[in-house]
Image (cartoon, rainbow, N blue to C red):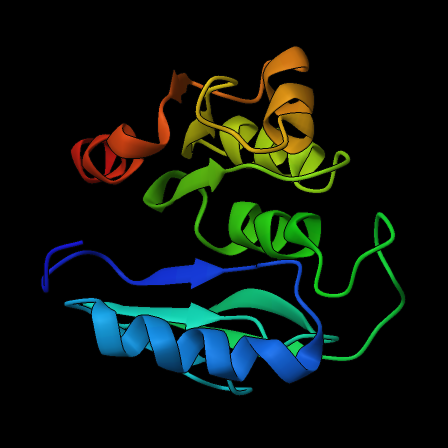
Length: 164
C-alpha cells in the first residue's frame, strides 16, 4: 500500500501472543506503518491497525476523527476478535466512507458484517476462490451478495484503492 493510503483496520484470527509480533513484522517489511491497535488509537492515513488477539476491535467516530475501541466481549462466530464486530461498527460509523475486504479464512465470520457494510453504502471486496488458502469466509460473503467485487489476492490492494 502507498504511504498516503487511507487508514486500515484489520482483524486477523490469531491468538493474543502472536498479533503484536505479526504487526511488528509487517511494520518492518511494509511501506506503511503497522501496529497492534490500542484502545483509542486514531485511524490515520498510511497506517494499519491490527486487532489484538483475544480482543474485539470496533471502529468509532468523533466528528471527522475515526478511532478504534479495543475491548473484551463474548466470542462472536466462535472468534475474538471477530471480523463481524469490526465490520458492523464500520457500517455504523463509516458507512459509505469505507471499503470492506474479506479474505481467506474458515467459517463465515465477517460475511454478515460485510453485507451490513454494503447496505450502509460501503464498497466491498471478497478474495476469489483460486487465490484463497481456505475459501470459507469469502465464499459465505459472496453467497449472500455482500461483495461488490471478487478479485484475486494480487489485485485486492489496487482494487481497494480504486474504490476508496
